[in-house]
Image (cartoon, rainbow, N blue to C red; front, side):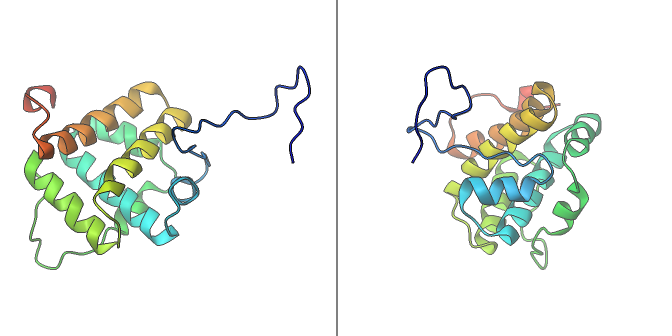
Length: 160
């Protein structure tokens, strides 16, 4: 049991409205497993899928900034589940979302986990790198997700 002593600033504040993201700067997959309660394999595969979509939505310069911020990013990309005869490509906003949902299903993750994992990854990038890098990733993924639900009016003009 924690005791609260006046003036003690070492006791963390936990919001009851949103789950806390537990950042492990050395490992994105551990951050995802600790924050979302998923398996390590699901975290590795899901992160790889999200990075793969970002690769197709960002300029190569911007994508290089994102990848450089994540330790062992190439191992995450190599863990993306194979789709056999690429039934869905990642080019274009609607195809990218179809690709996301299909890959997450293969990993045993629900579609709602796309948003949750995306949010944790954005927070991770902000913590280990910079706001600029997290915003680049956020633009790529959120525009893909928002387009799929029809809630974004003109995403194409925002993309590089």
